Structure formats: C-alpha cells, structure tokens
Length: 407
Image (spheres, rainbow, N blue to C red):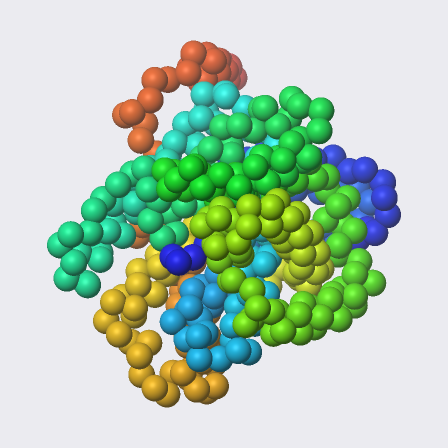
C-alpha cells in the first residue's frame, strides 16, 4: 500500500455471523465456543451489542501500524540498506494480511439490498470523499494548482477502497466456481504481463492482490486456529529472521516495485515471463509471512484491541500526515536519515496512527466514513414488513398490559 499500498484441534466450528461493516476491513464477530467457554470469554469483547473476536481486531490494529510505519520509511529508506530490507519484509505481508481478513469476513456477502447499501456507504462513499480530498490537499499544501481530481485513477491510499468494492461485488462469483483460488492466481498472472490494463481503477492491483481476497473467502475458522498454535509461533521467529536476511541480500538486486503489485513485468523493466513467476513466488512468500504474523497476533483483549474497529480511520487519515511531511520537506532533515532519526520517525508514525484509530477521531469523521444516507435509498419491502410486525407486537403487548392493570 504505497504512493510510489485454541482449541488447537481440527474439529470444524461454526462460521462467525456475517457482518458487513463500514470500514475498509470488516469488523469481525464470533460466536461463543462451546469447547472452551473461558477462553471464549477472554478472547471476545462486546461492542455495540455485538460479539467481536479480539484476535481479528488485534491483527487489524497491528497491520495498520505496520502500514503507517512503512509509509514513513519511504522518504528515508534509500539511505539505509537495513531500513530498505525491513520495508520489503513488511510490504510482503501487511496488505495480504488485511486483504485475507477482508475476504474472510466477506464470505456471506450477496446482493441483498442492506448489504449493497453498506457497501456503498462504507466503501464507495469514503472512496469518493478521499479521492477528492487528497488531490485538493496537495493543491493547498504543495501549492500545486495543476493537480487533477479523477475518480477513475485511485490516488495514494484510496486504491484499496476501490479494490475492495470490486472484490466484494464479485464475491458471489468466487463462491460459485469450483476452484476459485487457482482461477484468481491465473488472473493475477495474466495481469502481470498486460501493461495495456493501464491505471484506470488501479486494476493491476485489483487483479494481482485478488488471490489473497479469494483465499480469505475460502478460509475456515480452523485455519486461523492452526496458525495460533505455539509451535507455529516458535517457527515464525526463524522464518522472519530468514526473510529479513534474504531481503537484505536482495535490496540491490531486486526492484521493490514488485511488492506494490501495481505494474506489469514490462513496466518494471523485466522480461514478460518474469511476471507470472513473481506473482507465484510473492504469493507464496507473502502467505508464509502472513501466517507468521497471524501466529504472533495476541488472542486476548489488550489495550489496543478496541482500536481495531477504527482501522479505516487510521488508514485513510494518516496519509495526510505523511504527505504533508513530504510536501513540506520535513523528511529532509539530515538527522532523520540516521539510525536514531529513523527510530524516531517509526515510533512517531505508530503513535500517530494509533491516535487516528481512537473513538474521538471516529466521532468526528464518521459522517464521511460511515454515513447512514437514509435519504438516498429506498426502503426494502421486507424491512418495512418486519418493522410493521414489530410495531404490531409492541402495540399488542401494550394493550395486554393496560388490560391487566385495569383489571
């Protein structure tokens, strides 16, 4: 994502209830597990009257912190091979982790009116708002009156909203076909050799990241239980160490643009046949590192768990801070390009995105990120019938109460 974005057994468990949230990454809910009630109570919290699984909220928060840190490293990484290596490792899995979770909690999506409404208000509307806001911000802060506004060419962070909108709309198709993941991988490989796709709707990213969304659609609760085992957590340590070592070796030998999945092989100056090879290789590496990341995600409720519900806010808003620093030359200070300066910027990015995920920020910006927009939609006949039935039940109960009191 860049400018240049316990039970440990194998017994099947029921899928979490479907929830189509407003945020870019769905807000998860999970039922109480009959196998281990105590661990269920510790792993889940209630928010807005609905059960939320702390594991997924923790994963979303930690991933968005890595996103912000990665963006803050972009102006600094050219002066440090170690930072460039860390940047590549983070970019190999932070967006795949987000996208897999998005797919996992999109499994119940269909063309039901209420879900389409939430897709429009929670994804399409924020896309339009921020696709307009970012160019206007550049015009003002960078004094660039020639910066165009285009809803067809996602700018900076907004590509993910555009991609999520398209992926969600195609969910019924992926649930229908017999082998969805191989088909999605084939489309990603084809996209990697087609520079003619162009920049409209950032379709290169939509197609090259598509396998992770389809994988999320295909996953079951036991898959996440498997990566939460202690043995996997231990194995994740040497895997990440090896990934960093390989990344350090590859810094002068590999184009970082491969991790963005926004260009074809030809556009990256490579032979066409390397496109499908790199799609498969990066898919395997990203999947391995994502599993290791999930293995390290805490399962219990922590101080930052509630912030997982506000990751859309942190995601879309932190870009203004990063871009302001870029436009104003804040990253040009020489001391920021030394180890202590790089650590300072990293910590500052983590703190900033954490604050942007908090409740006060959500209350301020909810009108554009989670608008209700009742005025824009027709009332669903089934919904009206349910409301009428509920009113009749309430009226009947009230009459019975009055009759009992008068008697």
